[in-house]
Image 1 (cartoon, one colour):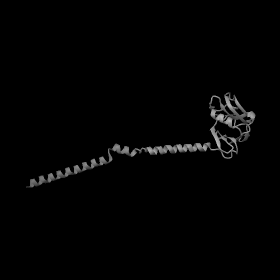
Image 2: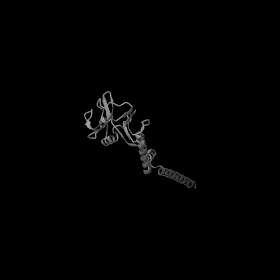
Image 3: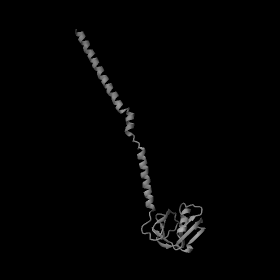
Image 4: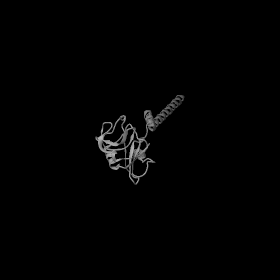
Length: 202
């Protein structure tokens, strides 16, 4: 009888041990299902969510709007640039504005200055200051030349290279040509007739 009791007791312990092992195995399996392998958990924690297509498009539009806003600010007619029909030239901005009598800007564009800058102030285009084609002081054939002042013997004015190119690198010493693209030079030629004001701003 004692032997049977001992056998029953051992069998009970064995069954209990198997039950505990089975329960622990179940818990481990469930935890792995919830979290995945350790490598996957690390990857999931470190990965950044990809932006949605809509969010990417919004970001792109925002960048474009900022760039356009900057361009508009750069192209805005400077304050204190005179009144009436005139050409406005910004030394700091390397930009020209053609302003009609109604204070409306008809054209604005970037330019490349020469080595000699005019002083800020108001000038007038003379009849002799307009030349349709000539060789510039840097040796480049230029067209639609509109001169408006001299600085220590160096003539200063607007022009465009016949081949449409713009100067590169440092300007040649003693040059006063303010160069533009061909189409802009043509617009200047039509606009800045004799008697037209040229206002140079810092």
